[in-house]
Length: 502
Image 1: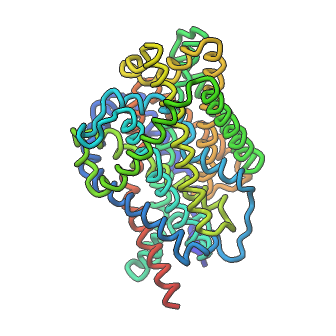
Image 2 (image 1 turned 30 degrees about the horizontal axis):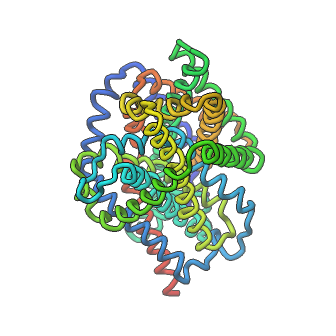
Image 3 (image 1 turned 60 degrees about the vertical axis):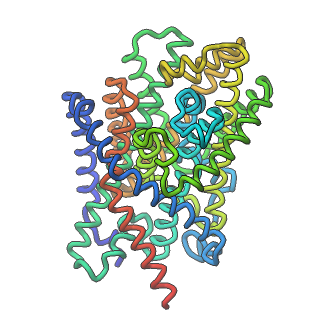
């Protein structure tokens, strides 16, 4: 009998996870100095030790998924030979992109490349053009590596657990890796612990994103409506986000998540098209080509010693390594979600759709938004870069305000886009958390409980008004989950070796 069916404590697991999440949120609210004075420095120190080795591991995973796609393994189906494709290609791509990182692109679309342009951490002798290298560094953080990490999670869970009769059991690969090492009683306890850590990683990873998105939404409302009560407006925004992702999760995959994801992809491409029409296109093309070339150089020459191309190696800890552990925190829910929506697709198509298509869209997005903002700043002396340097949360809106009558329309469109993107990520996370915890579809209280918990913790972070803190909280669960992830990879490899032997 599959292990997930013999584990007779889904209610205990869910109660334990909720207690941890809500309890930690209350403690953080009552004693905020624990976050700012102790948590942040501790996480930065840990990243200083683990960042570089994990960066190398993610590089290996990127090259591995490319090798898998072009190997005979690429012909295998996600979910087994009898699995059928459930969603259209457009619906599938829309959902995976919206779940993976849609909201972050709105937050950082203008700000991050601009920050790396103004203060480039790269060695001048290697990358003299700060505009293109700023885009390249952003793509290192948001491009193929992040999506390769997600793809591996989906392969481990979709290619192994579905074929081994343990669908949706994130602990199955680890149990496979420990066969013959620990007895069944210990396997049950291990399974419970793995699912608990995975739920915590998902929860805090998404909470950090909700808090960051709320900061940007609040900034937009302050600019457009003159809202002065930052805390109250933040509360209303989090309430709206929670309401939206709760309704979407209640409607399910096809009616809720897929519909919102498709709408947002249409709106995102409409924003890109608008900028390409009304902003000079040549600077965008120049930055896109130069930035993509610098990006290729960075991920090839800096693969094993990324810090060697930096003026200050500590920069990688605060940015790239921080991001990669954030993606690791999102990995459990994005991986389970990808495995769920990718059934029936050949592995080569899965890797093409999960790694290369989103990376291409990410290149276009950052090229258009950062390229147009930087070009506008240079030609109109608009002070956009200086404003971003002072407060990067307002980068997108400072740029849009320069565009006259179009600016207001673009700001409201981007606010709507951000609101729905963060909701689609959150509703996907709630769906997976409930699946991992053993909650049935009919258990409506479970949906409401997790929606409330996410909103509560996001509000606690909003009170701190500290974007770096949001990122630190987002990777709390990723640090212990790293051990589980490595065991998952070992179990995945062992399963394939066993198949080939037979």
